[in-house]
Length: 148
Length: 148
Image 1: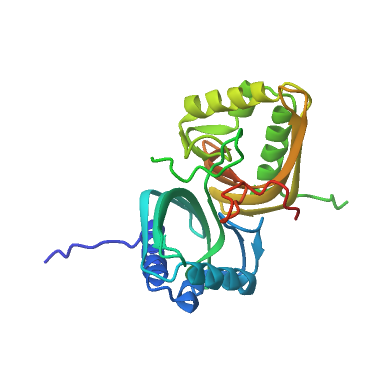
Image 2: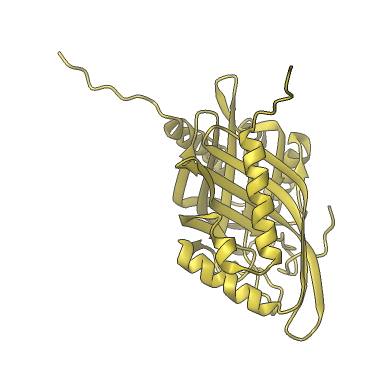
């Protein structure tokens, strides 16, 4: 009897990790979010600072971001592309993020995400990530209303 | 007689590619800049659009950017980190960019860069890249004066 088999690829493993990360983000569970990162992660986030170095600094930033949006959060990944080797990989997607700010106002917008991963001890971890919105040269303002 | 040998690593090859790219950028040679990218490159640039898909669209954007800064251009890579597998790699750096705009004004600032590469036919190419400045949540303005 032949059994249908499916070899789990690096891409499958990474899509599963991103899915698990997304569930933790929607649950606003910072500890669970941070379990997806390498201890020496360096992150370029869309707001506030040029970079966050190490899991403690980045975890504190995640906590502050979650406190800025006390209501329900939406977060969708569009056009996800994963390119994976045996132990190094990168992904990109266009994210649609929304939430209710501390004044009760709904905010949502599109942004870009690049996620870079490293496999260590048989497990993929996010070693670097980069979120941003582009800005307009004339006004210097972030363009959060561009649509893909 | 023992000879000192040096095995060329993937990291060496990628640093050489970035060096060659940087020379082309400083020379404002768009054709030479574009020779470092894969045909199916998808780029998230710091300004104007959410994304540029394919080498034609991205090349046209590079050309427009070069025309915005007719004077001499400075571009420095700081804190470059390269993580490379056998055929997939990613890099990040903090860039210091400056130039003279079309009104003769000197402009310079710091930004973040993530460069993702794929080796095909024995040659590394940039398959994806992401440049940005973070923005301030209150004003919505890009923070181009942050220093690393």
